[in-house]
Image (cartoon, rainbow, N blue to C red; front, side, top):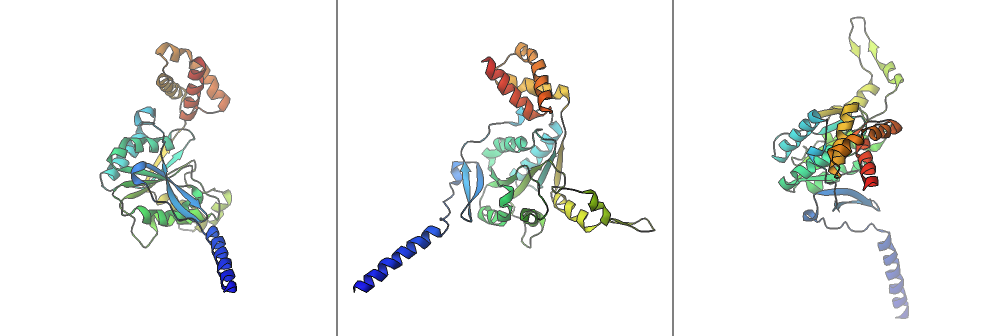
Length: 287
C-alpha cells in the first residue's frame, strides 16, 4: 500500500510538471468589450487580445490626402454595408497617414459593426486560424498589418499570399486585409533580378521568375493607394490643424510657422507625423 501511495504521489508530480509545460488555454474573447483586437501568441498558442484604448483620430484630422481618404473610406463603407469590397495595400512616404487613415475608418464605422484585428508580420502564418475564429461572427473585420515588408525566405510572405487569394477555401465574406508598407512590392528588389528577363527577336519579353514572385503578392490586393511626401504649404496646413486641436488660436498658429519649418528641417521630413510631433511639443511647452 505504501508503494502504491508513493507511485501515485510521483505520478501526480509528473503530471503537474507536464501541465506546466503545456500552453495555457486560450482566454474567452470578450467581443463586446472592444472594437479593436491584437493577435497574440503565448507558448505557441494564438489568441485575440482586446484593445481597450485606441487612437481617437478622425477622418477630418487627416489633411491633404483627400483622394486617398476618399478611396479608403468608400471601400470600407462598401465592406460595412456587405457590398463587394477589396483588400487594400497602402504604400508610400513615411508619416503621411497610411495607418492613421485605417484607424480613422475604424472610429467612423465601429458603430456600424466594423472591427479591427492587428496582426504582426511574424504572426501572419496564423491568418488561417484568425479567419476561422471570426468567420461566423456578425461583425465586419479588417485584419490590419502595419509597416509590412519582407526579406527573402520569410514564411509570412507565403501565408499572406494564400490568405489573399490562394487557398482552396473561399475568402470569408466578413474579413478584409488592409496592409501598409513603404515598399510597393513588399520585398527588396535588386538589379540582379532583371538578369532573368529574356528578349526574343520578335520583341516579346519573358519576365523572369524572380520578378514574377516579387510582384505577385501586391497584385493580390484589389486596391492600391499611394501616398506622397507633402509640400511645404501642405505641411504647414497640417501643423496649423494640430495646433488648433491643442487649443492654439490663429495668431499663435501663425507665429509657429518658422519653428515648424526648422523642426521639419532637423528631421529631414515634412510629413503628417512630424507635424503632429511638432504641434505636441510646441503647444505643450507654451502651456
